[in-house]
Length: 137
Figure (cartoon, rainbow, N blue to C red):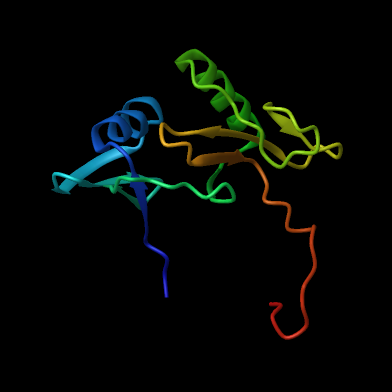
């Protein structure tokens, strides 16, 4: 089994298409119809589907992995585009590029026009949390 795509509901397909393609650099693939578009990022199909009225759950987000320098470069790109960072689960409670005290994880969060939160990170932090017996790898 292979995970191949994500279908993201959006309030306005043209506004979201502009954001994801022109600002974030996702590759346009094709329209499936007037309200649904396929994009591609890093070999992953990313569908945008206009579906108002839209209700975004505050816990929903998706992440894009890169290097630590890649996170800092992305922060500079967001700043140049006028896209503000938002508060994520970093312990500072601030909208900022956060580096863990051990220097292993660098992360930032920002939102798309519909307030879907996007995480850009350098390391997932697999050494945190716990494994429930019977469910672990």
